[in-house]
Amino acid sequence: MIVTQAQTLTLLAALILVSGAAALVWTSLAFTARIAPRASLTVASANAATALALALHALRGTLPDALAYWPGDVLAVAAFALLGAAVPAVTMRRLIWKPGAAVVAACALTLAALPYDGDLRWQARLVNAAGAGLALTAGLAAWRSLGRWASGRRTPAPLALPLLLIAALMAARCAESFVHPGAAPDLRLPTGFNLGFLWASLVLVLLQNATLAFLVLMRLILRIEHLLDRDPLTDTLNRRAFDQSLALAHARFGRGRGYALVMIDMDRFKQLNDTLGHAAGDAALRQMVKELQPCLREVDRFGRLGGEEFCVLLPDTGLAGAALVAERMRCLIDATPLRWLEQDWPLSASFGIAEARPGDSGPDAVLARADAALYRAKHQGRNVVQG
Ligand SMILES: Nc1nc2c(ncn2[C@@H]2O[C@H](COP(=O)(O)OP(=O)(O)OP(=O)(O)O)[C@@H](O)[C@H]2O)c(=O)[nH]1
Image 1: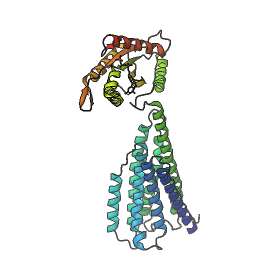
Image 2: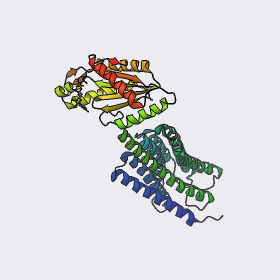
Image 3: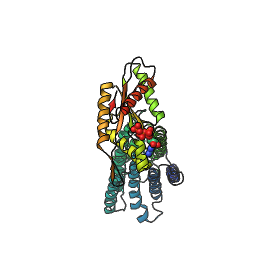
């Protein structure tokens, strides 16, 4: 097949346009729509650096050498470093920029030490190897973090594939310069390898941007789900979400998996509110929830039923286990007063526990027994566990 320079130049122009347009879209997402602003800006910068590096490459010979060569190569490495930072910025809200910045700085210094005259193969090898390394590390890290990120649903780990393919593409370009050491490292030259490389780059730039957009969308969906399920004050499950978990546990109970409930009600909470104010009451609720979290397993569900009443669902647990958990919780709350405006306010809570029984018509029957036990705890003088 005969490759013409028009083909390579057209593909190079398309790559610059696509990366440039992607940079604009991500920038507007960051500033106008304010969707994941920091992450969107990182992706925008990666695309902008790609577009600029390729534009400088395309304009070699036209622009002054001092502008077209060293800055273009450094920008190319920076584009890969930014791409690597983009996935954790989207999924974990963490901007991990130091390792990438160190690679860019090391490459910039090495490139500055290499003479930019005639033979530019070592410069190209360094840029391609750095790009492959950065994309590979980012791809592997993304694979691991994506698998963890959306646990409980179909793992989106394969979404890291575009990064791994980009790494493979850059490694192939680096290897090619050793296999054909005579070929000049100029993407504009009409060679079969350049044509294949440019096509693959175009597809991967589109794929990588689509993947990142999907991850941002997924982050938004997870956030909405979180807001729908959570009590805004304490971040425990709200009544609706807790009832759903309870219904599920009861359905499993029908298949032989027991569960228990621990109902928790703060003692003399009205007095606290009336004396120290509503803000102190809110702080006490938040403090209690924070204190109790370490008592729970990952499978346990902690919900706010309303006001100062909470309930913990303990799957695969009987009455004895629930009593142990409740007593540990009671001691914790009792041991830590609320520190409010330089004074300590003693806190305590009463607990009612119940386990699912074969005759129970539904989860409401178990809830009612836990509620009755809680009522007995209050009447026994509060700050006790009743079952
Ligand atoms: N600060 C704050 N107070 C709340 C919240 N929800 C409910 N309350 C208050 O919680 C108090 C509940 O009072 P009561 O039901 O009389 O219970 P109590 O004072 O804890 O008495 P016992 O349960 O018998 O020990 C009321 O004053 C409610 O206004 C909330 O989100 N924040």
